[in-house]
Amino acid sequence: MSDGLFQKIGYVKSDQLVDGPITPGQNRRKALEAGDLWVGQCHVTALAEPSQWHHHQEFDSVMFMLSGRIRVDYGENGAESFEIGKGDYAYFPRRAIHRCQIVEGGDDVHYVFVRVGRGETVVNVDGPDVVAP
Image (cartoon, rainbow, N blue to C red):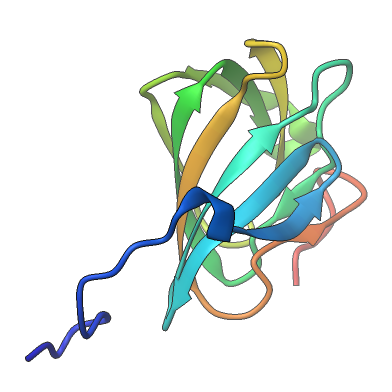
């Protein structure tokens, strides 16, 4: 018997993923949602220009890069950034506005993410200094 989030062992096959939510430049697919847990993957398509600025409302998020390399912009005026590639992790506190762009990998840039929280998982905004509700 389990007192945890899951009652039994389970799995999700790749053809069972659900599309969305979308940020221009980042196509996400949800694998599962259970309680406060939200897990999925993202195909980054922001090659010629960065993805749209966005945040994850009431979710804290962790991402694990499967392939390619991206630059993540964030901070006041979007002036801060870091790069992560295959095998690297990054974490984002709730309401932290950010965007990403492919540095290398062409059309094969993917990551997996795990979010903990409630509500909308993605809120697209017009810029890095928008006050996140």
